[in-house]
Length: 311
Length: 88
Image 1 (cartoon, rainbow over the protein chains, first blue to last red):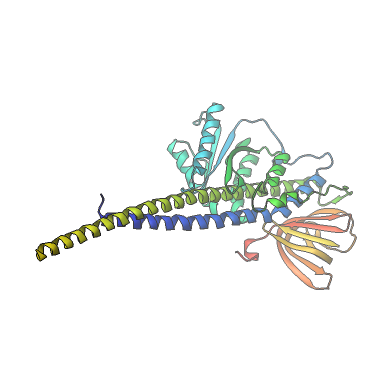
Image 2: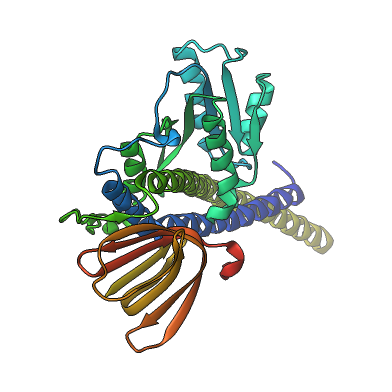
C-alpha cells in the first residue's frame, strides 16, 4: 500500500485541480451568458435592418457589388476557432469538418486559387502544422462582444471580395443550439444570399433553455408597404445597408462561436470537476484506511510492549 | 409619433416622442408627427429627441438609417462609437 504521506499529497493536488476546474466552469458559464445576451440585444437592430432591406429592395433595382454574384474562380476558407484549449471537442470538431470538406471536394490546399483565413490561435496552429499559407489571421476574438472589435474581420473579408481577391467565402464555425449542445457548420457567406442572413439572425434565439421563450415573439410586421421616399437614392441606400448587414452577420457569427466555445468549456470543466470530486473521494477513503492501519499497528506495538514489560 | 432607436449593442430609445432632429446625407431634418414615409441615411452627428414631456435628449451616432413609416412610426438603426458609451 502507498504511504500515507504520498496519498495525502495526491489528494491535495486533486483537490486543487478540482477547485481550478470549478472556477473555470463558473467563468465559462458567465462568459457564455454574456455572449448570448450581446447577441440577443442586437436583435431589434437586426430585424429593423432586415425590414428596411425588404422595403428598399421591393422594386427592381441594380444590386450593389457586395450582393452581386459572379463566377467562382477563387475561394477563401475561414476557420473560426478559439484561442485557448480546454474546451472539450470544440476546436477539433471544427477542424475535422474542415478536413472532411477538403477531402470531399478534392481541394488541393497548396493551390494558389485557395485562400485561408484563420480566426483564433487554434486555427492558426492547425493551418501552420499542415504547411498551409495563411492569408490573414485574427486572434483574441473569443472575448469580443462589441461590433467595433469585430468590424476589422468582416471588413477585411468583404474588401477581399470587392477587390476580386476571392469570389466565394466559406466559413467553418460552430452553431450554438443550447448550453449543452453545439454543432459545427460550414456556411457560404460570400456571395451573399439575403435569405441566409435572415436565417442567421433567426438562429440567434437558442432552441432550448434560457432565452428560448423569445422565439415566440413576433417581430416582422410586413403589414402594408408604404410608398417610400428614399434618399439619397435607392442604390446608395441599398449599398450602405448591405455593408451593415454583412458586418452584422459577422458580429452574430462570432458571438455565436463565442457562446459555443464557452458552453463547450463549461461542459468540459464540469466533467473535470466531477471526476476530481470522485477521485478525491476514493483517495480520501484510501487515506483514512492507511491512517487507520498505521494507528492499529502502533497500538498493537504499544500493547505488546507493555505486556512484555508486565511479564 | 412612436420612436424606436436601436444600435447593435442595445435599445437606445423606445417610446412616444414629439420630434426628432438628425443629420442625414442630404442635410439636417426634423421629423414631427405624421411625416410622410421616408428612408434615408444618417451621417455622423448627434440625434436630438424631444419626448412627450418636452424634454430633450441626445444620442451620438456614427451613421445609420432612418425609416419613417406611414403609421406615424419612426425607426432608426445607428452605429455607435465605442467611446460614446460605457463599456461594461
